[in-house]
Structures are given as C-alpha cells and as structure tokens.
Image (cartoon, one colour):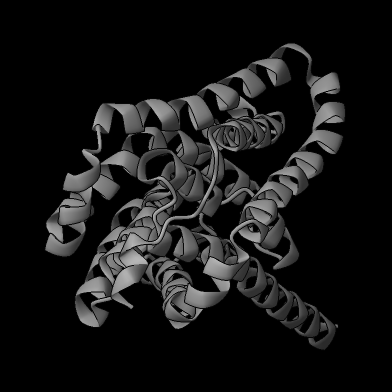
Length: 305
C-alpha cells in the first residue's frame, strides 16, 4: 500500500498537449451555449448563486479535508481527493440536471460562473488544504508546486476557451449554436476516449491499485451530492433547485483534475487513479440519481392528473 504514493501513471508530453487541447475544446463548446444573459439571470437570484458557490468552493473542499482527517488515506489519494474537490462542476452536470428535471438554466449559469471563479479558487483551495494536511504537504514540497503556474494553466484551459466561446456566440449566435450542437458531444467523447487510452496504457497499474480508491471515491462522491442537497435545503431552495445544486456539487470536472495531476505531479499514482475513478463513477452516480429523480417527477405528475 505504501508504494502507491510512489507509483506514476505513464503519460508523455505529446499526449498531455493533446489532452490540454481536448479539454480546451470541450470548454469552448460549452461556452458556445452561454450568453451574458445567463450571468444576468444569476445576479437576479443572489441566493442561488451564494448556495451554488458556497457548496462547490467552500463546503465541499472543507468537508473533503474533514473526510481526509477521519479516514487518513494514503497521502497521494488524499491529495487526489483535494484536487477533485477543488475543481469546478463538470460539463455533464447540465445534461444530468436536465434529465433529473432540475433547473437546467441554473445549472448552465452556475457551471459558467463557477468555471470563471475556478481560475482563482481551484489553485487556492488545492494549495490551502494540501498544505494544511501534513502528509500531503510533504508531497507538495517535493514537487515544488508554483501557485502562479497552476493559475496560468487553469486560465489557459478554462478561462480563455470560455471567453472565446462566448465571444463567438455573441458575434455569430446562429452559427455558434450550430457548431455547439456537434462540437460539444464530439469534444466530450474525444476527451473521454483520451482518458480511456491513458488508462489502457496503464491498465496493470490501474487494476492493481483501483481497489484502494474504490470505496473512498464512492463515499466522497455521495458526500458531495448530499452536501449540495443539504445546503440547498438549509437555505430554503425549491426541490427543483435542490436537485440542481446537488448535481452541480457532485459532478466535478475531474478531467481538469487529471490534467493538472499529469502536468504538475507526473501522474502520481494515488492522485491519478482517484481522479480517474471519480471521473467514471460520477457519471454512473449522476445518471442513477438523475433517472431516479426523473422517474419520481413523472410519478408525481401522473398522481396529480
């Protein structure tokens, strides 16, 4: 078990550049569906913004740190948990929210808003909690992580594609929607395929060590979903908005996390395997939850007829 902290996932520079470009294209495709009106609608509902941002960037990272203190996983796994928790909501959260009969407009707006905030908050939360826990702080010292470099990479991968996509949508609205219709699903499939190829090239490592992150990843994800739903309930949000906040909190951009792990930690075993497993599991858990809520909504509708 101790050797997991020394295991690395093999991923060469050329593959890393392709992964960078793929994630940037995903974000560009997402941004083609976003307008300034999405942000304006959020400003008209400050409580929704507050709950969404609190849940993703304050409560989840803090709860993750508390979970690490309780279960005391291997340092590299703990660092992977902190990385995932520091990332913004994943792009598929919009689809999951739509399927769950949640507030899709809120989901899209929060994803966009959270992505902009993540340029600062993702590096901050990761650095803060990573250095707060002594075992993970030791790993951070060995890699000499540069906070400015971390911000720069997040800005290049998330911020610039998001701004460019919104500019294209503003200048060429009809063409942007047409491009987004094909680009978004293609880019997501392409990105997932790259991650699968990366795992396939390291399948022996993944098979040998995934058992160490299995229950941790599932527990972490369930806690994230429950926190989002619980916080939204405490703030008195409607059931539709509670579902939305829960999904936004539980579906993290683990692809960004993986990319940062490969870039700054050379694919450190526990981190990479945890983030990769989360990326697979949150799709499963999100779909199951969305289908459950969707069916529940249909049953309630039938009973009211």
